[in-house]
Image (cartoon, rainbow, N blue to C red; front, top):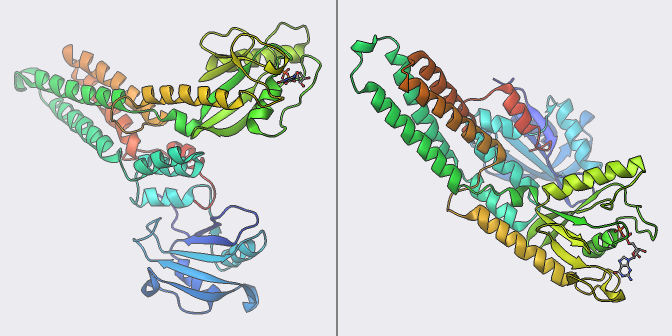
Length: 427
Ligand code: GDP
C-alpha cells in the first residue's frame, strides 16, 4: 500500500498560458489549502469553488485564483483533493506549488494521482491505460477511442474472465484434498468443459478486439528510394516546412528523421530514410541498415522511383518529366494532395481490418496477458487430461493471475511502475 502523504504537482503543461492548475491530494490537502487561502477549507466546501488570494511563506500574496475542493471519496484520487487555478506562465504556478510544498505537500511522481485513484478503487488498470492514451492522443479519432475505454468498456469483460479462472482454480485446488475415487466421476470432464468455455470466450474477445494500434501509436509511413530521389524534399513538402537537410549531393540524409503529421484524421509518423543503396561509407551503411529495418516495419512505404513490394509508388520530381507511379513534385506541389489521399485510403483499409468485429480495443499489454492466459489454459487442459491435478491447479492459478493483471485485481509494484511511469507529472 502507499504512504498516505499529501502529494502536489502543477497539472497543466509548462509555458505561457492563461491558467495553470496546481493539484493537491492527500490527508493534508484541506490544511494546506487553509494555509494558502487564509480561510478554513474543509469538506463543507466540496463541490464548490471560491475566488481568493493565494499566500506564500510569511503571508505574502503570490497570486489570485480559484480554489476547487473535492472531499474523499468523491474525487479523482479518492482522497481529499484541492485544485488551485492560478495564472499561467513559468513563474506564477511554480510559486503556488512551492507554497504548497512548504505547507506540507510532497512533489508527486509521474502518474501518482492516477496511481492513487487505482489503489483507492476509483478506476481499474484498463481505464488507467485509457487515461494515458487520451492524454497522448494525436488526433480526435484516437481521443474518441480512448474515451470509450475510459468509461470502463473493458473492465466488465476482464473481470468476468478473472472470476471464471479464479473459480476454476479454486475447484481444482479443493479437489486436491480428495483421492481420485472420492471425486465425482464426471469431475474432470466438468472442469475441462469450463476451461474450454473460458478459453473460447478469451479467443472470441481477442478475435473481435481491435488493436487500435494505428490510433495509439500512429501509422509508420516510410519514404524510401535511392539517394537523391527527392525523399527529404518530399518529407518537407508534406510537412509544409523545412525539416530535413536537402542537398544536391547523394547520400546526405544519413539518419532517419521522424515527424508527426495528420493525414485524413490519422496520426502518421512520417520518416525519411537514408538512400537504399550499397555504400562503403560505414556511417552511411548503418543508416541504410536502419532504413531497411524501417521499411520492413512500415505500415505504408512510399517508394520514390523504385520498386518496393506493396508500396505506393510515386514518380518524384515530375516537374522534370514523366515516369512510373503517382506523379509528385516537391518543387511545384503537384500531386501532394493525391499522395495524401492515397495514404489516407490505405490507412482506412488497415483500420477497417483492425475494426472487423465489434469488440472494444485492446492494448498491447492486454493482448499479451490474454495470450498468456490462453497458453496456460491449454497447458491446464493437458494436465487435466492426464490427469495431473497438482499441475492443473498451478496452471489455472497462473491463468487467474494473468487475467487479474488486466484490471489490476492482481498487480505487482513492477507492473504499476511501468504503467504509471508513462504518465506525466500532475496526472
Ligand atoms: P534525397 O537524397 O532522396 O533525400 O533527395 P533530396 O530531397 O535531398 O533531393 C535531391 C535533389 O533533388 C535536391 O537537389 C533537390 O532540390 C532536388 N529535388 C527534390 N525534389 C524535387 C522536385 O520535385 N523537383 C525538382 N526539380 N527537383 C527536386
